[in-house]
Image (cartoon, rainbow, N blue to C red):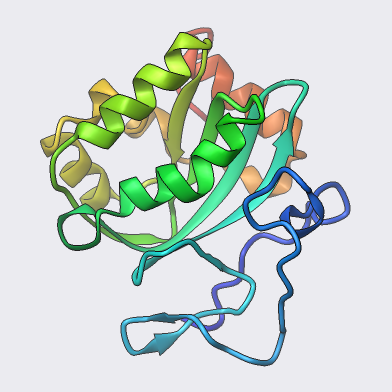
Length: 194
């Protein structure tokens, strides 16, 4: 677990700890002291905690002009026990939303499990961003995570599924990644990788 590091190749373009509008502004990181845990396993110290004991994130890039944020997720998304969507919404997404961000791309290949609860916060999030022409998309979701999300009917609120998988996003610049995802959300492209 401690070797799974957040994507770092965009750091010359953006760092959340240096962005005064970021919920992680001013945060200091260590490369050597591991403090965050996922169950009994330490995780890389570059991941940001936001109140969940099992889910972490890293804001990789924010563009205030084009109103989008690219966020990498890590851990177990557990709404049943920890109400992770409430914590993610309140502590990470809402501060960005308050600064005009209405389009959120969540990279989910490191989300190892998903446990659902009710869909209240998903509905609230979707309503807020859609009023401003926005959306939330989850990319590269593992099959069992995607199936649990579908069983919870989250496709009514966020974009995910086969059309949003198989994007090799780490090889592109942030704006290109956003434009590809937006083209799928808008229906101009059927699925990622086309």
